[in-house]
Length: 462
Image (cartoon, rainbow, N blue to C red):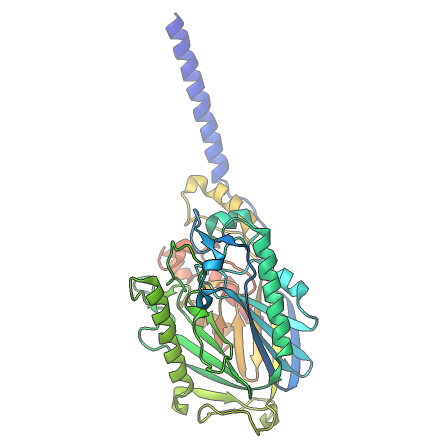
C-alpha cells in the first residue's frame, strides 16, 4: 500500500510539473506588444550655415581604469591590461569640427564596438554650446568594454557596465571636441570616391557581395591635412582572445606625414570583412592598415576620370545649384582665397517597431526572448544627413549591408553612408534575404521589413 501511495504522489508531482512547464511554455511563446506601430517620420530638424570654411581636429586616448573587459564578442569576456597596450593600438576619441557662418558640425569617432544612446546623450549634453554633434563607433571588436550601462548588452558583447569606463570615455570625447574647436583653421575640402580596389574587403555571406564603395574626404589646412576614410570591412583583425586592447586597423591608418587626423569609419560594412591575411594578428592588422593607406593615397591622386571632385566655393554657385569641378590633384591652401561653403544638418527622429526574435530562437521561447529584447532595444532612432556643399553624408545607427546601401542612399539623396552613428539598432539586411534566412538575417533584431522602415525614415531627410 505504501508503494502504491508513493507512486500516485509521484504521478501527481510529475503531472503538476508538466502542467507548469506547459503554462511557462505558453507564456514564453506569447509575443509581447512592446510598443504601438511606428508612425510616420517625425521631428525633422534643420540647421544651416554658410561662409568661409574652418576645420579643426583632435585626438585623445581613452582615460580608463587599469583593467577593463574587452568588447566585441559574447561572454565570457577577456580582461585587458590597459597600461600594457602599445601606443599604436590604444583606443581613443577623434573629433572633427566643420564651421561655416553660424553653424558648427562636429563628428566624434570613438574606438568602441557601438554607440549606446545613453553615451550619445551624455556627450551631447556635455559638449560645448553651439555644436551639432554626431557620435560614431569605429566598430573595433577589441576595444574597451563596460561603456554600455545596459546589463543585457554587457552579457551579449559589450562587457559588464563599469562606471569608471563610462566616465573616462565621456571625458576623453569631450576633451577631443574642445581641442578640435581650439584647432579651427581655414580649410579646403575635396571628395574622392571610387570602387574599392580588389582585395580591400570580402563578403561574409556566400552569394551576396560586399559593398564596393570606397571614399575619402580631405580637409586641407596650411598646417595639416585631415582625412575621413569610408570603407566596408569589419575591424576584427586583432587577436580575438588577446589580453590587450586594440583599436584594430582604424587606429593605425595615417595619411598625412605632418600628423593630420585620419578617421576610418564603416560604410555599408554589415556583411563585409577585411581580408584575413596572416595567421599572426599583429601582422594582419598592420598589413591591412598599410593596404588601406595605399588605396586611399591612390584614390586622392587619381585623375579626374576617377571621379575626383573638389567642392567649389559658394561664390561659384549658379542658380542655387552647386557646381563641382574636377581637381588636378593635391594642392595647398597657402595664398588662396578662403574656401566658402554651405553647411547643413538634417536630423529625423522616428519611433521604432518592436523587436522580432522569430529568426533567433525556437517558437516556444520567442515571447520570452522578445520581452528581453524589448528592454534592450531603444524606442526611437535618429538618422542624420550632413551637407558639405554638394556632398551629402548619411549617418545611420545600424550595421547596413551592401544590399540595403543603394536604397538608403537613393532615399536620402546622399553621396555616401556612415554606419554605427548615434545609437545601435543591430544589422539591417534586405527583406528578401531576411525572409529567405540568408545573409545577415540571423543577426537582425527587427522585423523582416526593417530595411523598408529605415529607408522611409531616410527619405524624410531630403
